[in-house]
Each structure stands twice: as C-alpha cells, then as structure tokens.
Image 1 (cartoon, rainbow, N blue to C red):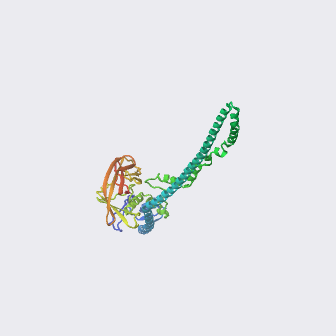
Image 2: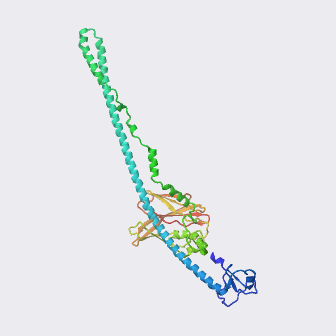
Image 3: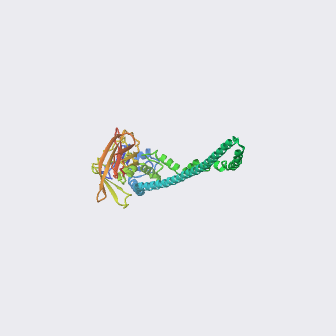
Length: 427
C-alpha cells in the first residue's frame, strides 16, 4: 500500500508555522536535501548533509509539486494506453469463443472430409479386393470343372479299354480297339495344365504402405507440436502473473518500478474475468478477484455472438439464484473454468479446471431455460444442485431433449466456497 510509505501532517496547519526537527528538537526545519529527499534543519545540514545540495522549503515544494504533476501526467498517458489495451483484450476475450467455434467447425469439417475420402478409398479397395477374388475363384473353378470332367471321361475310356482287352473274340475286339485308340489320342490333348496366369496371386499387386501413409498424415499438421509446447508453458501460470504473455511498457526510468508493479497486479485477471473496467481493480492487492455482492434473480449479461444480430445483447435471468458468499480469505479456492462439454440425446458431460488452491470437493448448479421474453431476456429455472463432487467432470442424465441448460461450477475447501465459474450453455 503506497499510503504506508508516507507520513501525513495535519492539513489545517498554516505554512508560517515552524516545525521542529525530529533529530534536533531545538531547531526548526528550514531546508530540503535533494540528494536524500529529507527535511533538514541547520544542524542536520552541517552534520549529515554538509556536502549535499539543499534548497529552501518553498522552492522544494515548488519542485516536488511540479515533479508530482509530471508523474501524474505520465501515469495518465500510461493509463490511457492500458485502458485501450484492456478494452482490446477484453473484446478479444469476448470474441474468442466465436473464433474458437469457427475454427472448431473448420477442423471438424476438414477431418470429416478427410474421413470420407479415406472411407471411400477403403470402400473402393475392399470392392476391388472382392472383385479380384471373385474373378480368380471363377477362373479356378472353370479349370477345376473342365479338367475334372475330362479326367472323368478319360477314366471311362480307360475302363472300357480294359474291358475290351478281356474280349476273347478277335472279331469283336478288332471292331472296337481302333476306335478306342483314336478317342484316347484325341482326348489326351484336351487335358490342360494350369497356366502361369492362373497360378499367379493377383493380391501381390495390391500393396499399400500404411506406415508411409501414416507418416504423411502426421506430417500434414506439423504445427501441433509447437502449439502443444506453448500450451504446456502456459499451464505453469494458471492464475498468477505469466511473464510470457505481457511486455513491459516503455516509461521513464524514474517510474519504471511503479509501473512494473501495476502490470504485475493480479487485478488484471479480475478485470478479464468480470468483463468490466473498475477503478478499484488497479488498487486491489489481493490475488483473488474483487467481490461484488449480488441479490437474488441476478441478471447475467453477455454478448451473444451466435445470434443473427451480432450487436444485440442477450440477458440470462436466473430464478432463485443464490447470492454468492463473500470471499475475503485468500485461502479459499480460486475460480474454475468449464473448458469442454459433451452433449448426448438425454445427457451431458462437462469438464472443468482445478484451482491452484487445495480443494475438498466441487459444487455444480444447473438451470433449465424456460423461454425467451420479448426483450431477449432468457428465464432459467433452477433444475438441480449437486455437491461433494470429487472429480473434475460430471455427467448428468435424464435431461429433456431439445432444451437449453446452463451450468456453473465452484470449488470448496475448509476455508470456504470459491467463486462460481462463468455460465456454460449446453444445447
């Protein structure tokens, strides 16, 4: 606190009144040391400040007043730039979900198309495999059937020839012997052996290097490793000051330390979470966001970028909305953030982050959207309250289909309850 670094005098004292030196009670303060920035008397000047630059009190007041005005002017310039930066970042924060949804649809559609292409290729390959098998089976069956019939015919001729050899009558034998010889000689050339084409395996030509294909698919997204590395670095600073996301502002050397303290103030996180600019935030030293008491039937307003009118604001009015408890103890859990949802026909599953503080369990409240009024105000009725949740996810079943639900989560430990998360809408 900057106030603790100063000693205030009585405001009603007149300028002509003499002030005694704290070190020399019999001597009055008469000059100001520019080297040590201290009020001194004549004895102090001769003993402790004999080689320092000193000026009268009136001149010192004039100089310090001018310096203070100059410092205030510099801060106002910095403050104007900070306000612009905050507004830009807050606007980006509000629009980031829309950017994320657009990019998510793009990625989803892209991979769906990729899956469709791969599925079509798989289908064509399977059909080709089936056709090759049918063709080869047909060729083999034709060879087997033809060769088997020819062998059966030849077996019949051989058997008939054996019976003819047993004939004792020369006349009868000679009548059939020559015909049998001709038939056997004509039948032998019609018995074929399988050609090399029939013996060839056509599936050998159907070769796919899936390892190479897998490497090519992995190489299509080379930037994922860099993104994952940056995300892993950001996880080191979940709620405190992250030096990688802030750059020092160029100010004069006399004020650099003060401005650095201002930029490190965790109240910036509070302004990002609240979505509003507050004068109290730049003076607040606590690590937890400032608490703003609310009443029942709280109205939560946010910019609904999914609406057809992009600048139209949709308001959610929560019926029987319990007032959050004051959070003054710094050991209570910090806010949580719902980062992923899965929606099924009659159930929903939500995932949230865990604060850096110790957490005993989580509490979840969810509301059912009853309808939208003429002023675009959504009425939501409390549908359920869940407590003693040990994990960082929850699946709620038996939900009504085609109904909007609003979820919020907070962490609880022995010191108290943390802040509710931002409302997450699930369709």
